[in-house]
Image 1 (cartoon, helix red, strand yellow):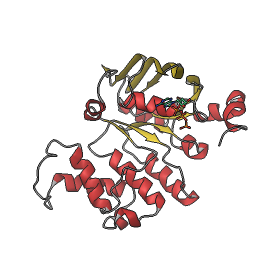
Image 2 (cartoon, rainbow, N blue to C red):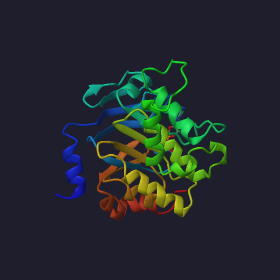
Image 3 (tube, helix red, strand yellow):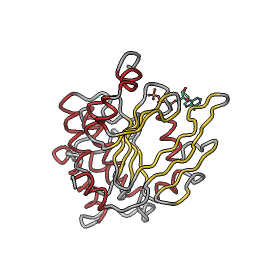
Image 4 (cartoon, rainbow, N blue to C red):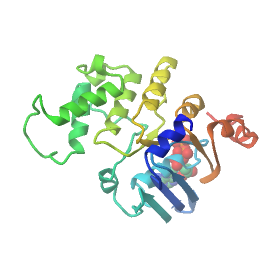
Length: 260
Ligand SMILES: Nc1ncnc2c1ncn2[C@@H]1O[C@H](COP(=O)(O)OP(=O)(O)OP(=O)(O)O)[C@@H](O)[C@H]1O
């Protein structure tokens, strides 16, 4: 058994995420049409597609930011189609955004601490954090997981762009998620920063599955074991990274002209 198969078999059967016939209309425009996708626990999947393919709308439906016009969404077997976002967060779903949600005036460590606290039960306590605080410990681990220990006391505003993107990943990992949606984490990164991102994503704990929207195919295909290709709001193709990469129709549609 190869390492991917071993990892997936270790985290259990069933589906982490199951979309069945999800359609989302904006007036007369169908941003998603009859989208059916199943992602196993621990699986890492890329969602590719050119501008307007429906990728962000798909994320918004999974998180509960948008309700689907029809269809169902199950998260670890539970029907969450009509759950508000916080109920999905409580069940272990997280996302990152294309637009930064960091506190620029606070340190790296404080940003991560606040994220841990935000998803913990005692979030309304006004007590100052102590050294033995379990949340401080969790924040330390996350800072380390995204390779920011060396700059943990620096203000976010002083970080390089790539470090800020790494910090966003740490925030999404706060509170022990089971599944994360990464929205273009490589956008604007230098080649060195991209290599660091790949290292961070491939080193995440085995039980954490994710979907990554990523325009950079080099990054996307290196950090996933499956790919869903979307076009005009529909699932156009699904397969292994190497199958998608060498598929003539995908090349014509996506890798060829017309994509930014
Ligand atoms: N809130 C909205 N109101 C109206 N139309 C929307 C809304 N959000 C998305 N759309 C439309 O739905 C379609 C899919 O958009 P979406 O942002 O999901 O695509 P995408 O694949 O994420 O594109 P990109 O790569 O440019 O981010 C587009 O035609 C878009 O204009």
